[in-house]
Length: 92
Image (cartoon, rainbow, N blue to C red; front, top):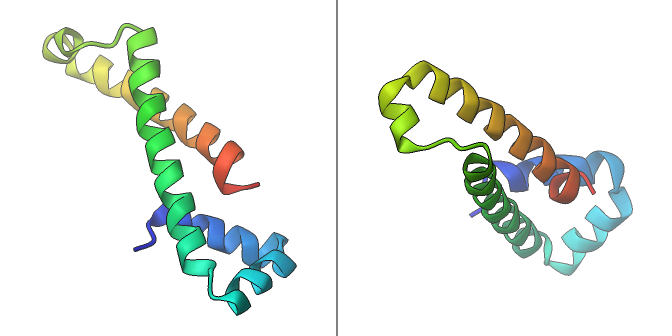
């Protein structure tokens, strides 16, 4: 199964790396390639979220004490992680 990140990479390949896309498609390796990209991106995203939350001192105590602050900070981390994954895996 190909998730959202694999689908984004597929769109990128179709629009910007047409020869590479055609080679993968004709060799029958496209789906395996996209599934691998999706898995790598998801693992990197989860790892970045954990690392950034730890580095920024975001804890369960903050979540219990001030949920809105916790949500705001986690959304910020999530957006930064998405940008990193996009630049290093999805759009290359």
